[in-house]
Length: 190
Image (cartoon, rainbow, N blue to C red):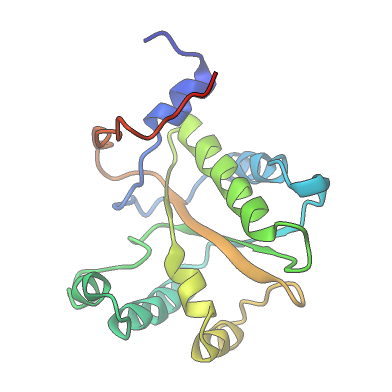
């Protein structure tokens, strides 16, 4: 199939779950963030704020707190994976980006998810891996979790909620082949 660069980046993007410790170049990080700022949003409200965490010690503490959420979850699969000694919720990635949004905007959860998708695709176009991190929202949804964020000094804009998060970094393994796509997921009405 003949594709352009954008389609190529979309089709090659994978969730990366093993990262090199190398920090992402600041120019590349700025391009990723710029792609996020150019995402579509309801009535162009741009209700988002991007919090970038690159501090390894801080990431490790936040990772441990997210792992605790997994261990206390009602979901068997989350508890099972979190029991592994070698498990890291953030896969030891060097960057976590959290997109928070104004809950009073028209569609903050969708706007913030679109911004994150733009950033993940921009990263893929530069051979930088990424992986969605729902654990951040799970942690922040609990009172205990909100205390953890405050204690770690991770402060979001007043009144904003986290709606999307992902880790970024250089993959330490070849990207896997894509999983088969569902063949019955499209209906065309003429």
